[in-house]
Length: 260
Image (cartoon, rainbow, N blue to C red):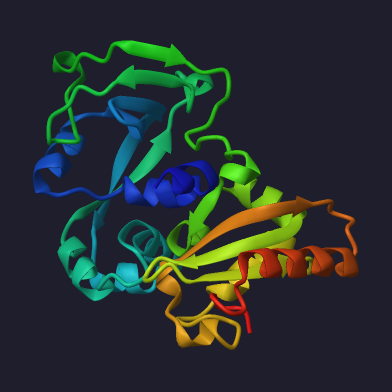
C-alpha cells in the first residue's frame, strides 16, 4: 500500500474511490475529506484533502475493462487473490471521482498524527482527535532503504519495491545470497548484467520456479534475497565472478547448497 501511495498516486486514488455501504454513506454526506495512511504503528501520515463527485454505480464491466483498476486490486489483494470474487463484492458500490484540494498540500506525506484507533476507517473530524506527532522534513511514506549489509527482500517485497530502492539496486553490482525459507537451503549468485542486482533478482522470481538448474526444482515464493558483498558499478565481469567463486567456496554451497 505505501509503495502505491508513494509511486502510483493514480492507483491510490482508485483505491479511495469506492467504499462499503456504511463508509460510502459518510463520504456521500461530507463534501471534503482528509486522507491518511498508516506508515508506522500508532501513527497516520496525511496524504491530502479531497472533495468528491459521484461517478455512478460500479458495474462488473467497469472493472474488467479498466486496467488501472485491476492493477490496483492486484497490488492490494495480492497476485494470487481471487479477483473475480473481489470484483463481485465491488459491483453496485458508488464510485467517487476524487478531486485533490490545494489546501494543506505542502504537508502531504509530512504531517504525522496519532492514530485515534477504532475499527471504522472513515471518521468524523469533529469527533476524532488527531494530535500532531511531527512534521517531517522529507515528504515520503516509504522508509529509507536500509544499509546494503542489513537488507533482506522476499519475492513479494521485490514485486512492490519503492522506486528509490529499485533504482539503487539497479546501480549495484555484487554477490548475493538466496535463502529458500522452506528449508533454509542457500544459493550464491553474482549480479553484473542489465540492472545489476535488481535485474538478476527479478529474473530469479519471474516464474513459479527458479532460474538455475537447482533453483528450478523449487518454488520461488519462499525465496529471500540478501547481499553478501557490494561491488563497484564499474567492476568487470571477471572481478565479479572471482568474488562469487570465493563466496561459493567459503559457504560451501556446491556441496551443501544449491550451486551446481
